[in-house]
Image (cartoon, one colour):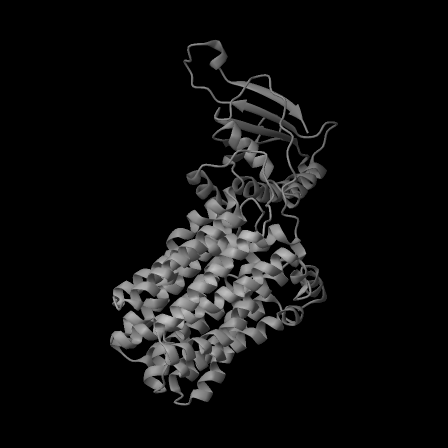
Length: 550
């Protein structure tokens, strides 16, 4: 990696444990480790219970699908809610759902009233809660901490979870083997209640907007549009979806590896999960060092190769020790990939939309994981466990090669905070729902600057469109070729105000570059108009406009 790239990586790096100096983040992070241990103990109990009461390999693999499929379906709604309401309250809502699911499962197992489909149903309900907790928690990181601390915080979240992963599954295996699934479910429920208590004690505020909340459908549409027009986010989504689809074979088929290939029980399964978590923990702790030595793209590629090697080792080894070592490699690849992609999405997203971009990213990645869990289970059941692992290893090598088409750019710190906007004075008394609004920006560009101007306007179109501009176009005057007009529309006056409040300092730098290409004594002129249909009954319904200067 070049010195410039290393400098950019260092600019967004913070000491791995620096975010823990913030008391709010520290309290929630510690409580999250406790609840994560409960989640993993419950996962071991559910997976092993399913393996003992069902002879279907597909049903065992569907345990993973049941918790990830709801995330795929609900995340986009959860993201829109996260960006419009208190992220703390959204987190509490999600954990209440998870605690309710665990409580009901505990009661029913205690009564002996359960079957494979019921287990999947309650796992699905827990996944519904997770659909809200994950985007709200990750989006809250930027509200609680400084932007430069986000990579370290995301790494800490991943390291913390995977540190627990190195202990939780083994603990879960011991609990299930010694006391049975009922005790495991009860312990998990207690950890969820502890996190809810911590959230009740902690409080933080996000960056408030002077504008009213967006309607849910409009918020979803705006989030989807911003995501689709952001190449960095789209690359992370594509890579995450493919990685989830292929790499989940390691976790989805691990109960079958422990039961059928190694001939072990729940303790053996817990040991294998501990190996996976140990690798993830080591990779997380050394993440800052790795980022300074290698580009994020190179790290992601190597992580895919490491997971492929893990799959191949699991397909061929009959040894518990070798399998645990291979899972250490797979765990390292797992955490390096997900941490890098998560940070890439966060640093590419302004605060007004970060909940939605993270939820869309999470939805697609969870969809890939859910589909992969089902796919590898079907292959294992209809062909063989070894073939499923070998095929996923080959697919992971192909995913590693996608970096040639969809590279992950090096992290860099950009100012994504909105600058604010002073509402222009109008001659008409517009309501928030008045519209459509037509915006025209007039430039004077000499012939020598035309090519550079067009290059900047291509970026301008992307920037304006992803924050709400509709039907953007650029026109050149046939009689005065130096006169250019940028035109776009917003559905309502409120949408125009939202558009300008969403522009960040990074976006505004483009205005300065365009101003340098503009000639004339006055800056580019902005003209605001409101469209009115022809044939209106009163004269005031004709198109009206206001000119103002930047």
